[in-house]
Image 1 (spheres, rainbow, N blue to C red):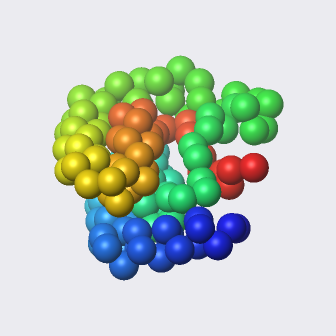
Image 2: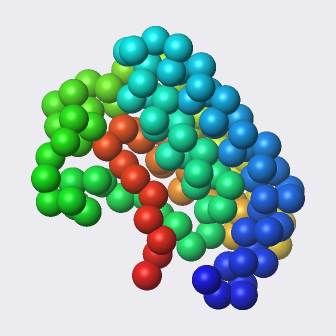
Length: 135
């Protein structure tokens, strides 16, 4: 990890990334209460991981990594993403978008706004996605 990525991740973590990550993980634990919520809980943990240290990470479809379709990348994943979008994704994405616009007001906040946009896109359809380090 470059020094700049490390510095940005530390600033992000201290200025709200820790709270955001814990919030996503708490939502994941709540989703794990029911069997139906397990895929949604897994998605919350993926986004939570990225919310802790977003610089130098990106989300990709698991099928591109493994070369095989799994439960989250197939038809069930699409249905899960539709349900997620209706109940959670739209609102979470909107929240990240509002935060991104707030960060874009200042020049210093632009990198943090970009990370919120990345998290907003991921929060819309997270099932079937995984987080990987950027090359």
